[in-house]
Amino acid sequence: MRRRVFLAVISAVIVTPFFFSGCAEDPYIPQPAVDEYVFRVPSNFPQPVYNFANNTVSEAGFKLGRKLFYDPILSRDNSTSCASCHQQASAFAHTEHRFSHGINDQLGNRNAPPVYNMAWLPYFMWDGGINHIESQPSGPITNPIEMDESLGNVIAKLSATPAYRAMFTDAFGDDTITTQRMFRAMAQFMGMMVSANSRYDKYMRGETGGEMNAQELSGLSLFRQKCASCHTEPLFSDYAFRNNGLAADPTINDSGRTHITQNPADMYKFKTPSLRNIELTTPYMHDGRFITLDQALNHYTSGVVAGPTLDPLLADGIPMTAQEKADIITFLKTLTDISFTIDHRFSEHAVSHEH
Amino acid sequence: MFPKKYLLGALLAGAFVFSSCKKENPQPGDDGTPATGSLTVSLSTNVNGQPLVLGTQTYLNEAGDSFTVSMFRYYLTNIVLYRPDGSTYVEPESYRLISESQPGSLTFSINGVPPGDYSSMRFMIGVDSTRNVSGAQTGALDPANGMFWTWSTGYIHAKFEGTSPSSPGAGHMVAFHVGGFNGPHHGIRGVSTSFGTARASVSTTSTPTVFFDVNLAEWFKNPNTISFATEYNNTGVNPTNKMIADNYADMFTLNHIQN
Image 1: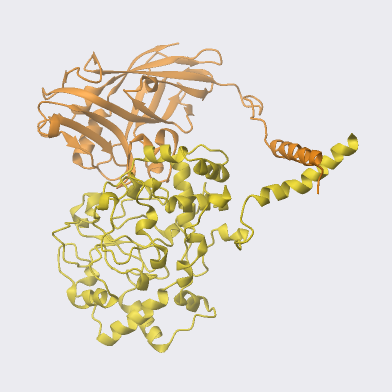
Image 2: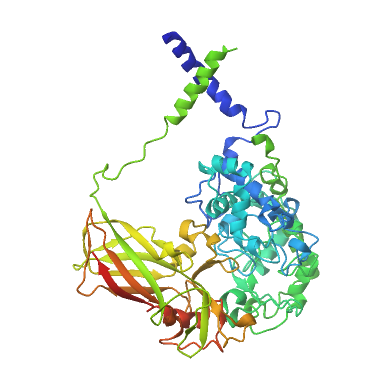
């Protein structure tokens, strides 16, 4: 009897790890190393705003956040997911769409911004109305022209889905599904979406693959003279709210930051967008009015409209010759991070094999 | 490879290995902390002395507008109990959503209170700025409770909804959602209530109850008389938001303490 118990214990020690690893992943798909689910600050970046306090990234939490990001269950009619308007190939922006469509084909009124380097953002949305990465998804989920769902209904639908109960258990220890857990899982996924492997980054870090030609270096130098006071390196935004002189569109009548602050001095001001991956994220500006980078730069040389809240830095526009604009655009294309757009961690995954 | 019975043994043993990782929940007093008591708070809502009944019951505001009440909710947070010598008990995680439609929320207990006589109590109407900028919250602060603005993130500290024939709004609706946690128009207000010569005597065996009257009419008077003919729908952080908050700051009155 004693010998049998001994054998059973030994077999438990041997078999148990197989049991737990055996059901986790399909062995025929190469799996990422464990440390692919650790948040790291690129050496040429500052410390992030969101430091994952109380929300340490785990593989299970990240994968839950990913599943939520790609799941239309977050919308009222189960038709529209975050990924409907934030697509990986365009650095999670929405190309070909000035305004993305919400449920029932409703047209939005702002250009869906890309999603990357979210951990460094002090606030979210073009008007900065959302103050925390964990609160960010509540905006589009509840907006009547986007996903138009109540948070209570989202939690009810997730709680009625066995696969989600299993994934919440993996991520948080039990199958209680709350908005806090949902938002923290999404913050793990979005916070991990770091784009820092453009040719520019490798150049700045002195890495191989970071070679720039003469025109690109000229563009970088011009960029620093003419653009960087707002599009500040290395994140390529100062995250201030500015009126960059776009003529107000009377069909939209978007007051910008004033919508949040009620302050007339903020009229037509929007958050400075990052220019990383700008080659991939057409159309440009908060209302997507420009299709090409040429159009965007031409706005600054000759299209700036005066107004009481126009940014003082743009009072005379930004003088640039045709050659200077060409050089700057050539430089801007070194901010493209293809590795980010094909990173399998951020792609939609079938998760049925995991449970 | 393994005989079946050993496999069974493996499963059982595995289960024990995993279950044995769990620690027993610590029991109160285990760690040498002193035993504590509780204090109960009971809220009774009225409109200038008439008990509040949601639905068709009509009331008059200071401006003379008749109105009904369909919703009355507010956050009561950051409770601090004071002893006569000035020492305090600061309740941790002190966030409650008081909702007239959920009578259970009108009576609550503050636990973990050190035994002693307490002579005053402070709290906030609304959610402090820290929790407005700290990301996803849960419990009373769960944004699914409907007390959270998602387009300009922050808590709605208090909500009043009803109808008034004076209101020019659709369906004669009246709605005030008071929010904002910074800037000149925010809606957070501190409430300080002295018990006078009375004391709430907390011990390990007796739990005092502090009874407050909550006068909803205060939302619309003192110092700002609100007429529903002109102010009937406000859901943003603006001067009207501040006026309502200045008004509701004194809606609590101590009724009595039962030891």
